[in-house]
Length: 250
Image (cartoon, rainbow, N blue to C red; front, top):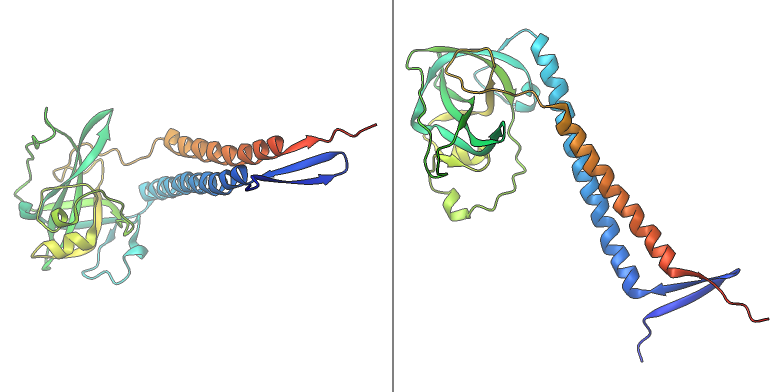
């Protein structure tokens, strides 16, 4: 008969090692810690964005160079750039929520004045149609504009459930801002950054609430501490159910 547990005696207590309980402990604790670290890192990233955004408000606007050898050096910088929008390769970033309403972020290529390069400008949020398949009507300035905004470097770590074959086809609606995919999909030279249009700019913008509410950061921290608590609770429950006081014979 296979043994399901092993006992160890120390002092007046018996530790009964249950292989089932040990297996559950080995699975649950690392999982809960990983989920806690995930939420904690999200809070740290959002705090970094918020701190950088606050600094952005007080900084002088810089000129974006024609080439960006190291895009990360420009992350969260305030820049000013002139050019004109070209909507042929405009995309809508899906699943964007504003005041509990679903919609899109409008990303339009801007041809940089005096250059053959383009840069994507996130012009802000626009509400979706009554049905998800109904795309909103988008108006775009035809005259040259001066864009003032915040440099955003899209993450290369993208999780998506989209069909890979579908992502190879050109589509106006995107689930994630995959810069490498975008650059490979268009017939123009695009810099590897996105400019988030300043809230006060009149360069064809929509709703632009780039500032993160403090409660979002607090929510991530709350979830992190919750997962860490589950990990500690799992250990305590395992010990509580495994240790018992021995019944000494008189």
